[in-house]
Amino acid sequence: MGNKTHKGLAVINARITAVVSVSLVLLILGIAAFTAIITSEITKDIKENLGFDVSLVDDVAQEDVTRVHNLLLHNPAVREAVVVTPDEAAKEWEADMGENVIELCDVNPFPTVIEVKVKAKYAASDSIAKVTDYIRKDRAVSNISLNSDLIDSITDNTQTLYLILSLIGVALLLISFVLINNTVHLTVYSRRFLIHTMKLVGATHGFIRRPFIIDNVINGAIAGLLADILLLLFLLYGPEINVIYAALKTEMTVIVFSALILTGIVICAIASLLAANKYLGKEYDEMFE
Picture 1 (spheres, rainbow, N blue to C red):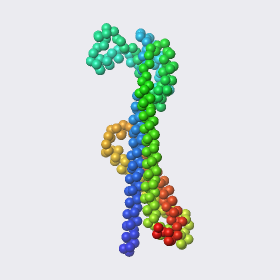
Picture 2 (picture 1 turned 135 degrees about the vertical axis):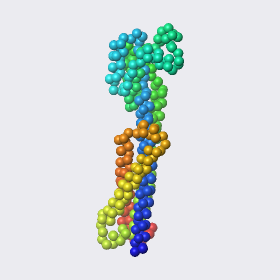
Picture 3 (picture 1 turned 120 degrees about the vertical axis):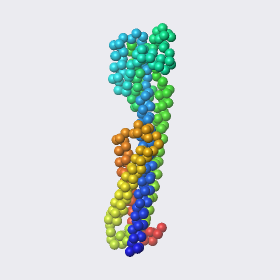
């Protein structure tokens, strides 16, 4: 009786150890996923603040302002186009510099300007150039201000960042599989003699594999759920909470939480299948290796 109790406790301890180990690995994956999402959202915000300024000719007619403004708004690359009148520009100057520019110059030196912001996927100098090329020829347009060097620098940096995050994600996924595979392998290894006994009594390989796969699928689901709980606590009480919440979206959060549970189930199922097959192919003497 005492021996059975001891074996039962050993199985429970092994299962708890496996679940905790897998959940910690999944937690790291979850943190990496949220880091990638937050970085992507912040990068998108930066890109969507890029654009150009369209300065219109002096004494431009209001209908021309409206026409150019509508042309820009209907362009698929444009996210936002705001008209800044000379009076509004003078007030902004006075608020920033503390001086009344009209009194200094006896005239308002500011032209009518349309401040244009492009959509994130068009935030590259070549894409913006296509927008500016056709509007530059308009009779009401005097000048277009575009900081190509800054745009190219941000584009290059974001592409490099995406590449680095992708490589880190792949590396973490591979490491996670190896770690989880080792954990599951140990749980199957502890029951290798049971596999051999079932082979001796004529059990089919499918029948022998089934309980190991089911047990580890359950372990993977529990580990994924535990990782979700730990990750949620991290998001609620971790550092820079406002930054995290500003960048995260509910649907993405749900997808990551669901993906962690699914990842735990899939990896544990594959690992248990591989481990069970390994010992199904061994003879009794090889079980001691």
